[in-house]
Image (cartoon, rainbow, N blue to C red; front, side, top):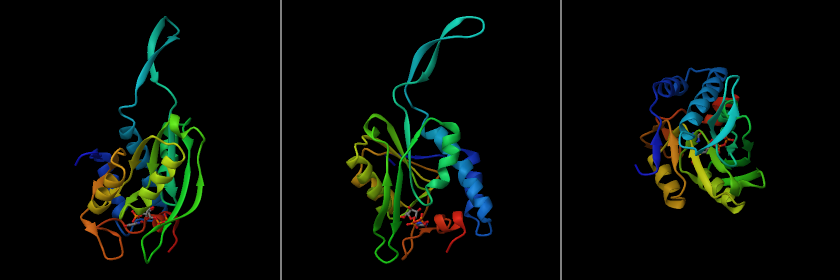
Length: 209
Ligand code: PRP
Ligand code: URA
């Protein structure tokens, strides 16, 4: 599928299976999301451009690579996207963070915004939009719309599970935003939940209902 990368690394796949299981505890679910966040971050940043700088080792001067230009913004969609954040910040501690507060209206499945706070230089950075679930993609499209309004030009969407319907919608609305996911599931049910999926990611992460 064009513009979609499925991260099929065995560690990611194994941890995802553990997360899907209904018996997994809140603590276990949160821990696994954090760990997978780290692994997905590794994959999604694989092609970041490098530049050479001069450094001095204890033995000699050398040219060594560093990531070029202004760096990353992580943009978790609240609440569940926050589950990816700690793992990613462990790998990229200097990244900026944009918080995008959205919830899905349970009847209409439309995304309702309740919070937005982003760094002012979004246009100079690569923005990784984070949300474990890409279901109808109403939330993803609303988040990307909002980040673009605020100047973001270079965006990537990172999730754990995607429904084919959500991929089609996000790629249709924002063909310039590539998607990284650990799996593409079968379909959405009549309530807009991903099947087989893992249930409600926010509720499972925070122990709410
Ligand atoms: C969930 C999930 C996504 C959204 C995906 O959030 O974390 O943000 O649904 O669904 P969509 O692709 O159909 O928009 P939810 O609205 O349940 O809020 P929460 O994270 O606060 O629980
Ligand atoms: N949001 C979730 O948390 N899970 C789904 O399956 C769909 C939307």
